[in-house]
Amino acid sequence: MEPGTGSSTDQSWTPSRVRRTASATVGLLMAVWVIDYVDRTMVAIALPFIGEEFDLSKTEQGWLVTTFALAYLVFQVPGGMLADRFGAKRLLLVSLLLWSAFTALTGAMWGFFALVAVRGLFGVAQALFPGASFKALAERTTPDRRATAAGSMLASNSLGAGLAPLVVAPVLLAFGWRDTFWIVAGAGALVGTLLWALLPRPLPARLSEPDTADDAPAPGIARVLRSAAVWKFAALFCATNMLVYGLITWVPSYLIEERGISLLGTGLATAIPSLVMTVTTFVGGVLFDRWFYYRARVLVIPVLLVAAVMLLLMLRAGSAVEFTIYQTLAMGVAGLSTMSVLGMPVRALPRAVIGSGMGVVNVGGQVAGVVAPVLMGFLVDRFSYTAAFGFLIGTTVLGALIATWVPQRPERFELADGPAGPAT
Image 1 (cartoon, helix red, strand yellow):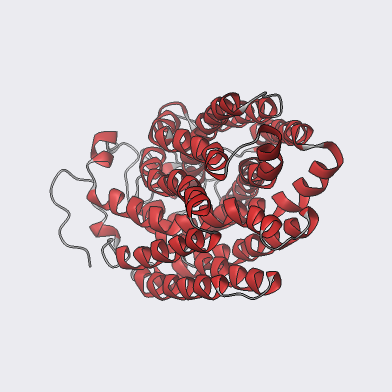
Image 2 (cartoon, helix red, strand yellow):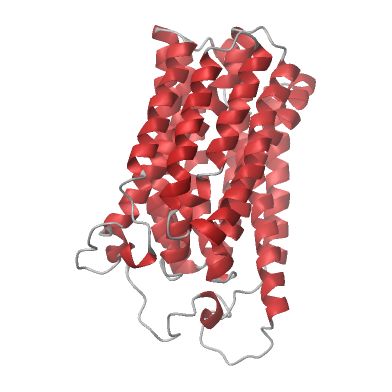
């Protein structure tokens, strides 16, 4: 337990101090998530060069992404449990320093199997981060603003994915793919140091979880793992995250190989959709907190169906510019649904187990990271890029169908041993 989490009558926690604590926390976590996604997605920019150097097929290139995603998936729940046990701040620093080390080692590898091994270790290190970040956020924000805060934090995922090609492509051209990994690793270590020094103290429990007494017994991880609601949201996150993982992994190779776009042009084209998604993810968090907290599916289902239509139009695009426009619309519209997918568990889970609970939900999202890169690489090898991107249309429609099944109200987000009852 970190300081400030016990019962308190400390009157120094004024509304302005609570707001400053939330703002500083969100700002710092956004900076780390940006580095997280730059580290994670820059391998997609480097894939054509890594593939050429080591003579790798598209399926083998997909495995470099999927190996990371598989390790990232497996260690989500253990990472969340460690955050709940040892505190968010310690685990945030350990995760960032470890993944920066493995980013640097990626640039020193000598063959396919060595790359697969180090990308797997990179995935383990990064898996410690999401649960710790959600726990840090829950400890330092009030429930009525938590989805907005989480939307801001997760908007930095798209920001990192958007900045990655703009930053990585010129550095890769100037220094080569190996040195690029070393440079980004140094930036990660620097941000980790700043996070440790500047992260504010947690709010007292009476502010961050006002409906629970400070001395109330905390639910255990077993109740989280038995919660049908948690696993339903994991399934929904899996289906919706296919779109993001699939596009950020394979669009750079598609534009270079099929459309003949230069590396710098590809960097710009792949940045635009992610930067737009940055804005819409934040907007989606505000919409959820203000209007859709009790009726998230009213937003999620139409948004995902529109995103599927945009993907279909993307497949029929006659030029690279038209392709990028429809990709931008698909990712931008999908971004509006992100916090409607994650907002309920972020607000409903007790902060004592939010690391573990969001670890479970994130397992679903990372199944997409395991499946989409390698399956789409296989579809490109066996059929075409059209077949690979068509797969994303099906998973996006599936997400809209799953959204009809998940709970809509916090009282249906059951952690007790008894049945939760039907979702409403």
